[in-house]
Image 1 (cartoon, chains in turn purple, cyan):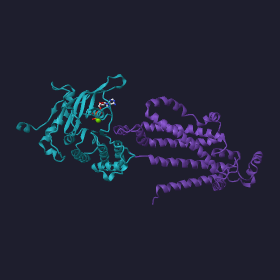
Image 2 (tube, rainbow over the protein chains, first blue to last red):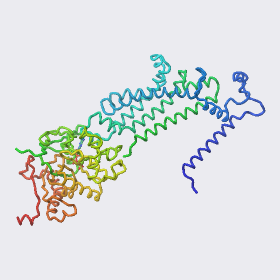
Image 3 (cartoon, rainbow over the protein chains, first blue to last red):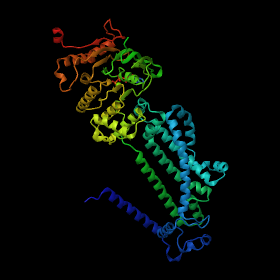
Image 4 (cartoon, rainbow over the protein chains, first blue to last red):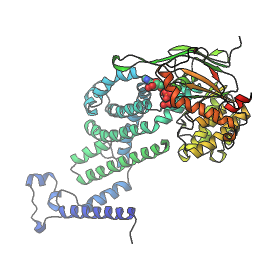
Length: 279
Length: 291
Ligand SMILES: Nc1ncnc2c1ncn2[C@@H]1O[C@H](COP(=O)(O)OP(=O)(O)OP(=O)(O)O)[C@@H](O)[C@H]1O
Ligand SMILES: [Mg+2]
């Protein structure tokens, strides 16, 4: 009997998880005989924690952290102690704001670039030089001009999301089949209706791929940006827990960043499916 | 003087060659015309410029020189008066069959409501025998069905003239036959004026009232215009029993096999006048003698 591919794959996945957790458990076992290897100064700094267990939390500790954090995600005990739900909401709202602003600029501009070889040639050098700039390099400039940490993060998201969307939109628009445009021409369809009813649906899958790439980058960048400017957000949460030497919370946050990133990507996967077409 | 419905005058097309090579004149001094309700086929070897002429008639391409008039008005760009059936069907894959036709119909009659558009579209979708597939997407259809949707879309806007560039070129012989029969039926019923490119001599004899013969390019010419002596209604299964069928067929095949090349090499009768290409009505020798 041969189990289905999905079943066998999930069995292998489960096995990998078990091996990983086991290795983790072994690596973080408290060292035997009470002879804890610890620098006395470091032990003092850890407030006794290091004398009871190795500094790296065990899977069990992280597991209980995940449970307790997820059971109360929206508590708010002042600026340095907020629930994970609140922190993620801050990060997501910044990502969405920056991303939407970028889409509003990138999609129409991409349309123009895709439709006009002149604009393509004229704007290409700027795009080529702006594209490889690490979005975080903009941060000082943003902080200086905008003078607001949160808005600066949004700007950084904006600037990193704009390029994949613009380039993909331009590419999608430029490669719309000539035949479809000729159909619209012979039917005397207005330029606006052609753009909305022919070019947009034809280029939508490519545009959505660009959006998906942008969203992926934005989610990577927001963590770093929030670590840099502080205040709120999942990136700040990671940095703050590191300063608290609460590694179990740091691992929990890493896990959440991955989970939310995956969900965002899945949303765009669904959207891509909605606009895709088969020739 | 009485002007024909469609009139092509002194058409010329030059394509610039890249890299300083001399420009290519695909054709020049092209004159012909035809009447409303006529079905005209144009035949010629690959590369002689048939598609270019059709695109100029459609208004999708511009001639280097010369003019095209339809119904007394100069053709200056694409227009709803001229429907086009594209060789590659050119259906929009994200729309259903109904929506593809409706896109055209709502462009033609902008003030129609949804129900009017739907009813009108359905009439033409049923005309090409696709009533059952109206809500399917193009990728769910066979090549022949897609081409039929393209034909329905072009007919649905009720253009003054229909232009078709090898509409059945990509189809197998059986499917092609079925669609040809449908086209004959529709054209007999609607008296649609059609200008069509084909490589298929039998197809031309079945469908066309006039067959325009083009010599090989570059500098292609309208060698002659053949009038189809076969009477309407023409039925695919029967026309080859008509003795005239072979007279026309031999004439056309003879042209394609040898004369189109000879003419390109300069062998033209001394009284050839590009303004009035010779009009020929091939008849069987026996009939000719009897007359
Ligand atoms: N955009 C273009 N640039 C340069 N040359 C072109 C262009 N389009 C067509 N040609 C040339 O013009 C000539 C006529 O082309 P056209 O497509 O009209 O031929 P055709 O008679 O339709 O051929 P076929 O039967 O193969 O479709 C060809 O020799 C082709 O190489
Ligand atoms: Mg052609």
